[in-house]
Image (spheres, rainbow, N blue to C red):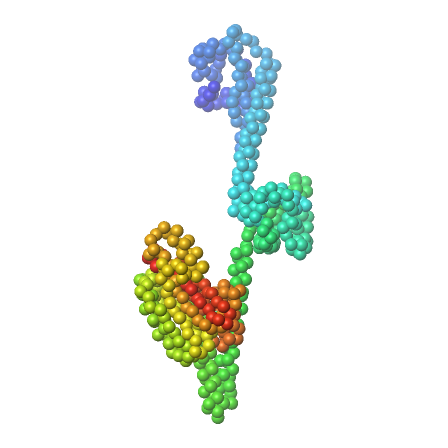
Length: 485
Ligand code: ADP
């Protein structure tokens, strides 16, 4: 039965709080329970014995949790003092049981909370025996390492770390076990199930028993492969840039040094040559810095494309006009196939791509050869190279659209040096030059194709090359023909 606190006078509550049982020989004469008289009458109670169930609250003060009551209805019973004691001791046991059950459910809640945080943690987590066997692993760790939970539980951490890494961290792990340090963080390579390695930061601590003896390790694993790859890219980039900057700077420095020394004062021809070298090389520096900045802006999406409908033939004509003199100088013929094709693109950026491709074709072709620029009509599937055919099918099925959404294929074909098959992909990466000193002498730094790839990809297209060494190369790129891209 639910009793309201107000039922009890203060002194009655105090009496119960102290854990005192109470015998009432006539419930209708009970000075502390007027409000219960009606209920007693209904049930037909004559006498009763009451034992409080007392518990300590958060502040360790006694609190009446409830009352254990025995009613006598048949007759006015004379309660003995040991009746009250017996009932009180049952009440005390009940109090203990209730407290235990409270603690148990609190424990269960906190265990569920703990398990959920372990299971749903974004980072990989594990518990390891002191020998390194996995005892518990969370899904994030399984995913990170490519193992199922049961597979991982049959392994040890030693199976996943290279032996030299283990040696490197042995001392720190010993310090952790001996409680000389409270936690440990190591950057280490872990073996993925596929056989690849994975850069991670492993943070470990030790759980101990009350006597301080180590029980198991708790380990958190964070995947830092991406960060590592970025750091490596950054340092490669810095070394390539410094290298590229140093070459022209050394020439400029040398030429200017000679001029300043006055050694050429009486040799106007050589003096002029030195000035020309300084001018050419500083031009190369300016181009290099501009290319680096351009690439950076493209890669960080800081450039907005101003797309509009452009006539593909007009684009190619502009490129031919820009490069006609350069081509003439090397006795190379530029030809283009007429087309009525329209493309949805940023005109200046596509001209930049084509200029770079045609310029490369000029650089790596012999005098007397021809370079062809063309746009393949998109419905002429039979004439598309294999790669583009695949993309067409894919993109087309994605759109489920009419032929107007088929991409348009640009092509720049030369009969020059060609590119080895294994280099056809990497030439689109930064600072990749495969013709060594030849490429350098032509004034490039290996950024042009990286810029082209970026521009084409930002248009939603693809760029690639096909080539036969000694026979020539063809560079292709696709552009969407529809506004939706
Ligand atoms: P750059 O031309 O400034 O060196 P690119 O990124 O434009 O840089 O080109 C990278 C490299 O790809 C060139 O150095 C060259 O080795 C190779 N390459 C590009 N286009 C051609 C081509 N048409 N024929 C042969 N090799 C080429």
